[in-house]
Length: 343
Ligand code: UD1
Image 1: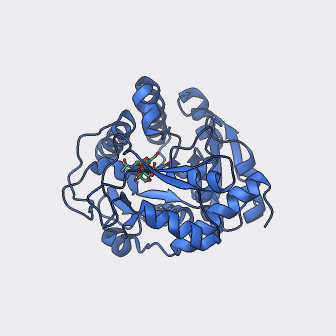
Image 2: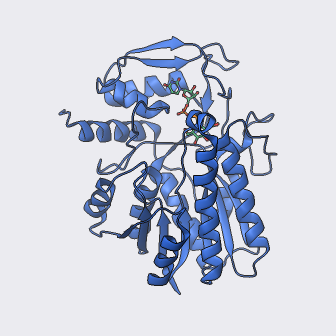
């Protein structure tokens, strides 16, 4: 079993591709599997342009256990990261079965194959969504999870439990669930980034597409929340900082540093930022004006959520480093690169 080799399931996607880059930069060998359901092969080209290394790639749907099993036959990675999930909250409400099937089955297959092949370490992409509308802020890993308000959120909670229970039932398996806050930005090289299909649901891609003239006007969903400027508060984490958290999580499990074989970490900056602040920050960082208006609240949005990152800082030795303005510059550079927009 090769401790320097990592399977990245969903490695052609937004978070997966940035993590592949950081793993390669840290000296890991990377095997990407992806079915391109929400990505394409251009991210593999981007990874290669940044690192000089093209990760091994196998086109596989992780819901197909037999096909995924063939990857286990061929490659002897000791660790795997599961990014192979759908992530649109609204879509999950409209198509719950599709979300439960894809998000849970792909993880179950991975967990079973890891045990069957005696592989040891799994990182799971969890989310701040597990905290719901938290009573006390910032949230720590001990903050009770609230009942999920969408099938997407439910799959994150259920997936954490699937990993926890399978680690408990094994004497070998280790698991780390990283609860991401709001991942944004792109690699500073502008070679990889977020490529949402259709109309973006998330704030930053909507902002960059508005700046690019693809969307006419950004709607700010609500200015009457109980927050200093009336808009929602979130913890926006730079995608490269987030990707690095996966590398330290893998390092920790490979080195068997922890007594506990299942661990959970919040991955955020620890700093709440409002929608208005983010929009103004984008305008200032990139020296442009954005067309926006205030609209009604969006159903299902929580007023505020941000992370207490003490555990990740102290136990993982990880912290968010990138300045928000640099993150917002990188987001715009990526969008410009994709659209062929000149300076
Ligand atoms: C949510 C989930 C997160 C999930 C993500 C994936 C929570 C707390 N978070 O993030 O787990 O990974 O969706 O889609 O459940 N906004 C606008 N205009 C827009 C878009 C967004 O004003 O056009 C505002 C929203 O109201 C919100 C903030 O921007 O206040 C961030 O929204 P978004 O980027 O969609 O992320 P979350 O909803 O926080």
